[in-house]
Length: 190
Image (cartoon, rainbow, N blue to C red; front, side, top):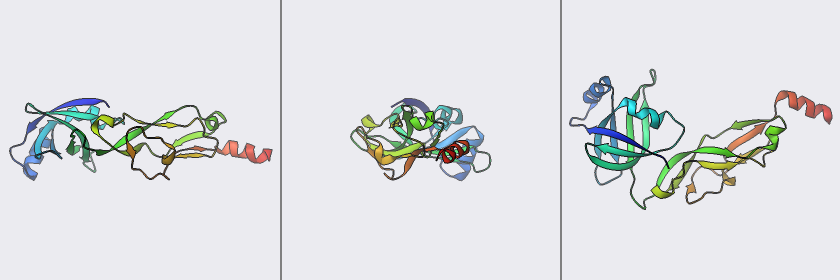
């Protein structure tokens, strides 16, 4: 899995007014938990561009005033009106300990339904996965080469490699829809 380095600075004072002052200074208040102790720190907002505004999943190499941690983004909060990043929670990774994470879906193969004029509609962009730090995949591969017109592929059809899929096995990942023009042609040919 891809890793990304983020440099942070410890926060001396916690609370609402201190967090507001940090945000005015273009900093984002953050928390790292899951390890021996909870670490409160702040990070310049610009460093989150490659981490949060991308469909890819990353392991984060946190550098908080010289102390290094391996973590994943557990949660991020945005302002409801102006979409400003308000807060980020990191979960510290430990060797051998399993974590839950949303991993993006990658389609593999060419669908005969799409070649016949259908449209591939993605229902799930990410799949929830449980795995150790070493087994976290970059993406979950979904083979669509057997999908005909009007058919769906479900989470249960995906074969996990070293991880467990937590998303409901009956949830559809993608569907090949039949366009209106093609429906008319199919009805006329019957």
